[in-house]
Image 1: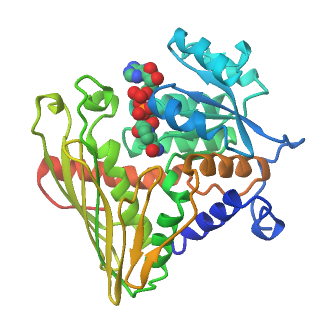
Image 2: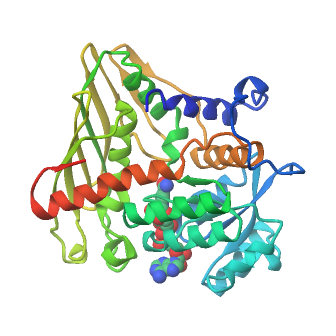
Length: 366
Ligand code: NAD
């Protein structure tokens, strides 16, 4: 588990500095079972689900990518077909709906499918994509629980396709630096992590407010502080306690806010918060000989950071473009996947335990 941020650093260098894509960054030991016989200049990707994240972030990011381009869409809303095909020049033969999606197996224009659907649909479409022989990126949280995550990983392995989870912060240079500072113990052992990611969700009917659809603040935003605690320590937690709060009628089916606490084998305590009740976003780390912090820490842009030694400053970049480009290189050149399905599984093991802790008001060992 140690120094897992190193691949992130490589990925950041690889995707942020054209011309640095060189043999020195490509491990000779990397397995290459997915090499394409004839290398395409750019791989093709199809977005499944054309809601907020696809429309506002992923499709625009795909206008900046070097190694992958938007070649297909999968949507249940016929009106979106015309809008997207005109805007992004997508031919009719590359447009699918949720019923005929499996026919994508015969489409050579599409190498990767990206599941951007409600969380309860992640497992089905990841498995259908894998069975169609397509490599898959699946949004966070990976699935409804750890059991589903294992089924998704198995399906991808069985079909010989790669799987990545949409944890874009593994490509953000500030978060990569937090991984390095924590995992390399630059300020000594990490003693305490305080991290929160929440926003004021004012919708009343959205699927994120429905438990059966994979809603809830723990599922939606809680995985960010959980990720941060795991990647700053480079360890897996050994116990979790959690308390949930629901104040508003609109949130009656889910947990509106959650405080949860993790302990790690190296002795770190993490005090984590999430919610749909208020806006906050911070990562504060106290170590034996100093501190480092990012605030805000998980946005698409505008992340700021400092350590006991001074301000952090990194060039602007596009997290989503970097992630999709890096995954395309994994598919094309057989490089290890930086954020594989196992990363989503590890989070869901903790999320499952956190729900148990909330329900039974007890500490759950992992
Ligand atoms: P959204 O509600 O805006 O979009 C969901 C899409 O799924 C819509 O196009 C909708 O039509 C479609 N859909 C298909 N069947 C549906 C059903 N039965 N009920 C509701 N919608 C259905 O959601 P979003 O914010 O785009 O989130 C999609 C996924 O992306 C989620 O897993 C979410 O966690 C993830 N996400 C990730 C990030 C990130 O920063 N990595 C940011 C936002 C969302």
